[in-house]
Length: 278
Image (cartoon, rainbow, N blue to C red):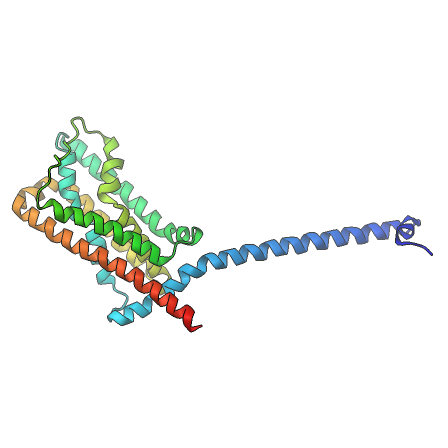
């Protein structure tokens, strides 16, 4: 009886056996590559599931509170978190020993760096949330906690503290435009987190990402103007008025931080409810 190995040694059949072997190898490689593609697609779907599931639940929360797309609410939130109210006194102190030319350059560079940074963070933030499997509720909770702690410090500072404030830089330079002007004075950590979350929700539910980005850029322009006229603003707003405004702003931010923590808990509760009803 002729074995397969002997058959392949027969002249004229050897080439056919080689072709069959190559075809079999190619099929094996193709099936393995296909399996790898399927695994990658599965991983991507799993990464998006947690974020997408919670984003899909946002309309249910809005319906409960009787809200719509909420552009007016977005303007208020962004104005409080990345707006000019907190920048004016900080910029005046930072540029105490600077001349007018340096003040204008610092204001423009701070505006430019902060605008580019916050737009990029908003556009690529949702992909980072999916990549690192960060749920929407986790992002909201972290932003709320940081906002709560910062606002609590603002409120408590009104009652006096033993800590002496840091003196302004004796020889200010353009290096201050990045730190501490842009980070963390203009762009606070909780402000960046809130922008990422709002743009993520807007792009997947309301389809108005450009509107949210427009609001963000508009607020950055207001920040620029506030820095250019910071001294005039402080001269108009007396210290007592500025102290009252800071206290009210701190209380509002404190409430906003707590509300974001509550919203993150509500999202988690809705996810649990959805899992239990399946």
